[in-house]
Image: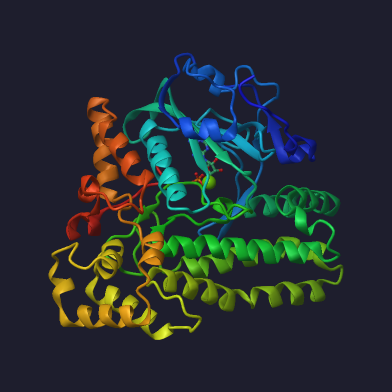
Length: 469
Ligand code: AMP
Ligand code: MG
């Protein structure tokens, strides 16, 4: 068998999922294959390149779609895996457990009028971004393969369809808790929370106030995740509660992008009219999302509703201090500052400099640690030179800076060019180049210097990403 499945999710109340049959894909072809990941997961897949095996043809278990709900742009909605199925939980040789999920595999009872499919370009896009984040050392879902289906998918235009094989510790979201708390019994909620704690936070299992500890652990893990997004300039784009993993893994790469010209109010998503999910707002939205999760846990935390609310609020009140502490630590690493002092002022100054000059986020930090890399006028100004001198006086630990400041990120315009080239000619050359460059984002490599050039300001200003999938 290809996968070593031992699926536990389907032992939960059957309100939480729907069993499915394997997708009927008549003409599957592997377009992208993550061979290192196959090795890491210990998947039994030799080089025969049979897509059917990766799609679960010899699976020992029944695939299923998960039910969940979520707050989308602040409004509660009932959702579920509308176009995804979990094939099973794969156990690696090191006894780690990962969901193997097909995305774009057809309709489920949660499809709500959608076709359950995915376009090949959006799945290549997800593959690129998930690998980029992973290689930047940020916890992320991973992509095992993109497999074309030979089917056509109707969007604005007719496009080729594909399935992405997505790998995550699990696909349990804040929104799964919302679903259980709203549509299942209090006994189910307890059972579900115990399941999640045992699966993802086993160290909390024996704690007497384990649900509150669980909330605290999710708060910390997701703060860690979002602070890492700030480190590399990542905008998730659609931080709905159904896109927030309970483990702090970044996932659901829809209208995401990296920031170029620094502006905290920056949003690229075509549907994010009011900037709810802008770069700078991600912190506040995480806090909001955590409050939604906290509400679902209230009945487990204390039978006295007021007391439960008091306890959850007390945890939420630690959010700002916890975020600040992680954020300052992260920024100190970017500036190579190793001493224990806070250094708030210099951090505020560099962010102010970036904002006033709308300078390139990634390249500015490179120019601080490796002066003379770029010829931009902004780096020749006295203001920048004074700032850099001050950073060097307070920090400047080169090793630390090199480990925390990427040399190149996935630039929006390059992603678009690569997808366009694939669409127009069927060539994956540019996609492959991007995958190579983002495989070692912290390594200075002359061959990759073209990936350091931001798009024109006009391109960036007009660029819109889409959930269009
Ligand atoms: P997303 O924007 O990817 O987080 O998706 C939001 C919700 O819409 C999820 O419940 C998805 O499963 C569902 N969905 C997205 N695209 C489709 C589609 N093509 N067909 C059916 N459901 C979909
Ligand atoms: Mg989603």
